[in-house]
Length: 255
Length: 305
Image (cartoon, rainbow over all chains, first blue to last red; front, side, top):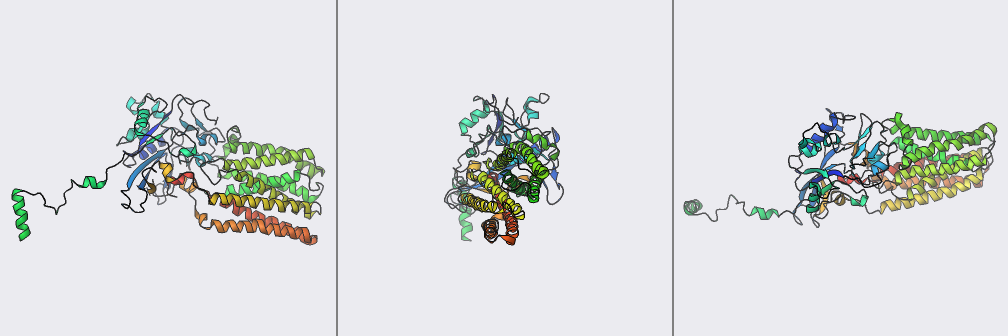
């Protein structure tokens, strides 16, 4: 049934992504592809994988943005621009339009934990759910003709044959910078909820009315580059030299 | 949005077919004439052809029957259910017209209402998507309904003129609907071109409080499913010209030809009406192509497009 759960789900499993920490290494992208191409359902196929026009289905992608302070067109004009690496995967929205548009019942949101999934045996590959998603979280697998999306690694998080430390989504487990966090956002006492409360975690495109579960933590304010530059001594500068070095500096200047 | 040929063909063909079937259901043509019989068969063929063409873009068309199950939530499913249900009164009407040469008012009128509901459902598939702001408007179903009605009366006038009964009345009503359809479409275009984007790179990333956000690097070098499906922008450069061309070919030319058919009459009427229908269909294809090609998807905020 592709109606959304009528009551708020008791758990809201999701991710919290720290934009202050992400270094843009794409390790989570590869780890996600690796885990999800070998497990349940259709493999995440690539088209023309060894050719010039390679492309394929991914469930998690890293975009990189440049943020220029207002009033500046070029870098440095109105303050310092900064680069923000931006991981993006399914946000497991509470009002997920991808679920309600599905004509076959393949796309659904679990009533117990809010994870949004696709039943591939029912998917006809019409692509309407991908159209309805403002975030681009869904990609068609062109080989299997079915829609693929982030499952929040449901085959890891509930998998009791894995060590407890591994029972988190693959992207979270692999992130070398600890920029991705997994937990229950319905529980105000969970680590992820506390992080969101402390750091001002926010929704992407709230105006789309989708009420995403995943939250993003903003980059922390950064001190200007010039403030850090003070300690970096320029090679030509001999100011403050003492003793032998002051004498040598003077002698070399006179030669 | 990528203008898939199969979807353009589906919406134009089924729109014309449902329009014609609805007009036939009103009983303006003499059901005993050969041209009315052909019109009944033609309407069903256009509807069926459109629906078949819509299954061409599916990844797994063999499971298409499953699309009838989610009518409670999905406009696509509602459209599928209505399309199949509408075949019942349309087939009954066509049977009585083709085999017995009779017009059956009950089946005809029920069919006309169901045709309108089906076209409305088709339009709502697009109009219900908030992620595509260009479509997310009440003007979208209005345009689809008016275009279907205009096409229906136009085709019916061709059938009417070829049997010398009912042609003029259909042509006169067609002029009204063709004008109404393009006025509505003009409003639709005005709305699109003056639209303040609902979502921006700033709201998409939540980084607007730091400053102006622009894409520095895409996630990958080549295109992916999303950029191919949602990132189509070839037409935008010529969008204004194409929309004017569509109004000229699909609106002004058919109106002039229909006026010629009504006032000149005689031997001029049939070829003029037929030419009007042909021009209208051409204009409609351009309009439908622009409908997709001009629409910007919110996900492009992440792709710098």
